[in-house]
Length: 95
Image (cartoon, rainbow, N blue to C red):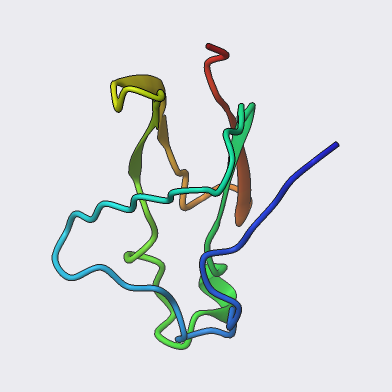
């Protein structure tokens, strides 16, 4: 069984979910516990970018999980390759 969700439904070029500056953080609280096995990151291809650039793509990514006590566990660190596929899958550490 796979569960997927998108942080934004409008995925047309130029309608991204931007962060101000060079860093950003996202906290997602789900209504029930989950045990994720992978993270998929997708960014627009350079050829489809209105600016012709993908410099805004995420690069260094860290994923943490929180247990019931609020203690964080590092599930993985990844580098999104802007020269690679637009959709990249990163396996997470299984707790």
